[in-house]
Image 1 (tube, helix red, strand yellow):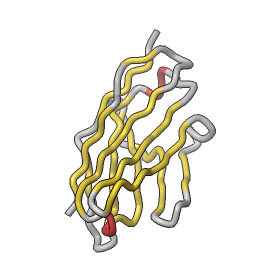
Image 2: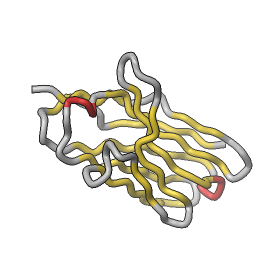
Image 3: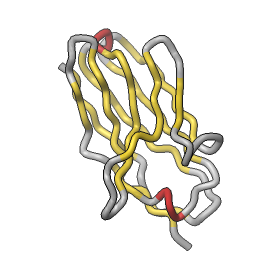
Amino acid sequence: QLRIREFGGRSVQPDNSLTVSCVVTGSIAEIRTMNWYRQAPGNERELVATLTDDGVTSYSDAVKGRFSLSRDNMSSELMYLYLRMYSLRPEDTAIYYCNIAGVTGGDYWGQGTQVTVSS
């Protein structure tokens, strides 16, 4: 069983940078794939970035070259997942969700953190 909480979302002006973070507690060995999704008002939830357990990252076309996903394993029961966002645009405004797919089939979500890009 994993527990997830996101934090770090806030309002920023266009072209600025922001990092949102996700703290994961529980059995870190359960983790197979780590993802960040986002959902803007009126839109479906979309996959933004993925990091596999063997270190392979991938990004949606909308954020490729501007966003960077990384992890920091603190212990066997604690991990941080970071989404570093650069050159932010108004269309990046959304609620950002951390998602973990487990080795045994679990699908874990946080409550989301709001990012607003506006001048």
